[in-house]
Amino acid sequence: MTSSVPLDYTPPSSASMLLRQDEHDALRLLIAQRRLYRRAKRWLGLRWFGMLVIGLAAPVVSVMNPDLAVWAGAVAGLWIFLGRTVLVFLQSAITAKAAATQEQFDLYVYGMPESIDRSTLPSLEEIAKIAGADDRLEAVALKEKLLAWYPIKKTDSGIVSVAISQRANASYADRLLRTTAITWGVATAIWCVVLVAASFVAELSLLQFLAGVLLPLLPAFLDIVQYVVGIWRAARDRGDLARSIEQRLRGNEDGIEPNDLLVWQERLYGLRTSTPEVPEFIYKFQRNANEKAMHSAAGQLGAKAKKAGQ
Image (cartoon, rainbow, N blue to C red; front, top):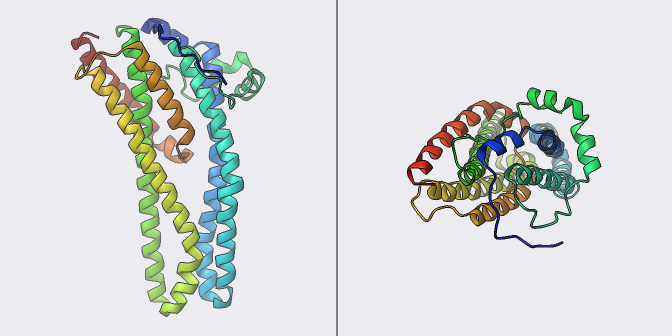
């Protein structure tokens, strides 16, 4: 691994970046990273499917046959173990590849130097295989709404366009992560209320409730809590980065220097590799609203940056 970040980085013009993000070399990376993230989310989906089955079946089995309560708890514990070892390893390995591929897309569009060799970056052949045939790249990108990925405007300076794009990336993920945390939190709270109500209706004793309902679900519940806490932490970190870039764009602090963009890019990469995955259905459900908000915010910040003389 090498590290040699040049201090003379100069962002390309906004017009150039606007074209670069839709070139075949860029689309190949963008399509590959999206498909890699989907693969990682499949492992996440398998993990949570197991949790859902345990959450629905364990209380029923334990109430119908209290002798099976211990076995229900054992199955839940085993799934937690597999989820936190094998499934997390597979998911993390693919996420690391996706993050490195997404980083390559950013570096290509922004014309940034590669300061560090990412060992997790897939080979050129692997990326090409994942993305598919070159003559289908534009069609796939159009179908998956990947064209014009970043809200770049020709009238903005290159340094402002990169900063706005970096902020858009952080802010977009921040909103998505918060939505995920709220969704899981609300779903978990509702499920807990339903279980308690059902236990009262079934007239379970305290011992039956503890042994047949609470204990089998406790490992899964703790895993969900840890996941939600991780999501909130990741959202907070993204939000902090977005606000930091926004303050510089507004001209409230010193003007933006090219080296600031390199620092922010490195921070984004770190967040991408450490952030828990967001379920695909939440991403799709929120995508249109989040993209409209992203473009609106980008237009406002571009205007404020001009007023600040950037």
